[in-house]
Length: 251
Image 1 (tube, helix red, strand yellow):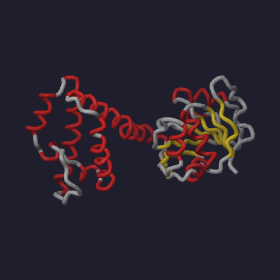
Image 2: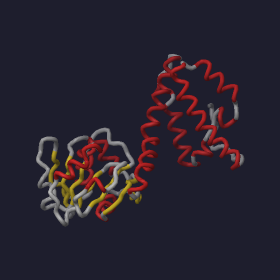
Image 3: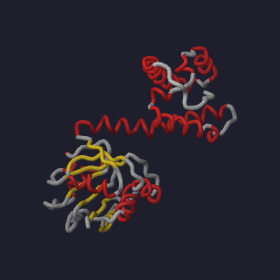
Image 4: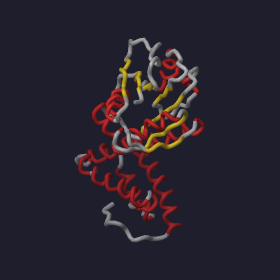
């Protein structure tokens, strides 16, 4: 049985604790703020650093190296150099959000993709969780993490704009969430280019200008950025040619 010690008692650390334990990994404790990490690598196969990115290098340096113990971090943007001076290094970054330990553990065990690098043990842990490893070398970590942030953080930020704009008409965000979920489902089935609908896809500049006239000026930058991205997809859609729609659209 693989044994792991976790450093970091926040949402990520506790999510990994529960998920790894339920997958047959022996979790030998979670060190939190104030605990001495010097001997964390003793008598375990791996130490997982579930700490903020800014703390990874300093925490790794505080752990006394053990030749056969793998030191891992779960950062999306950092490479393996921050785990110096440890000989066996690895990383595994889940492509799911971990809002709390219960939901986080379920998502980690739900078959997500993980960006992995370094020692084979990272891949073994991912497979043990039922996940799908994606090999992302150090020189691609920043662009990988940018894509991850766009997929999660930027989508949330866009829905924040939906909430504000809908609220200006006295409408609740909840009314628009099925539309957003349907759009994501269409992307999963068809890809972004085929899934695009709406005025930018139709070249309906009059409707876009109507939107711009009624929007609060503070919302225009975000709206215009969205139109530019949609127009880029629309150009690709035109190259692909028409395809029968999967379902009717009201946007």
